[in-house]
Image (cartoon, rainbow, N blue to C red; front, side):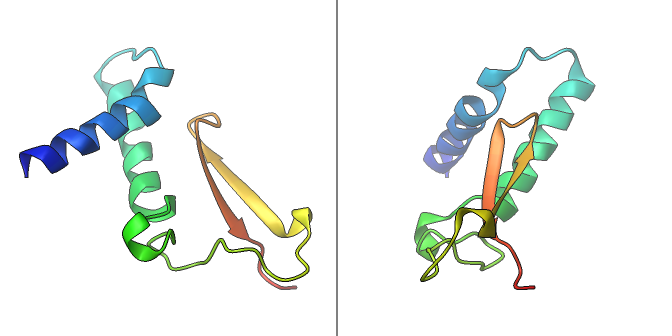
Length: 88
């Protein structure tokens, strides 16, 4: 388990904390909370065929257009996730 935790901490450091100057414990907790939400919900997981945990697919639809894909940003654009817009 130690190696898994070290790898997760490295992801937290590289993908999130390296982009900020942390101003106190409250700011640090906010950054970690936002990263955990992104990591657990929005990030594609290799073990799930690169699908996020919520199950939506990022594979291109046939005849797709760029305006059908939406980007959600958190932490000022440092963390981004993509999803297809719901059919109207």
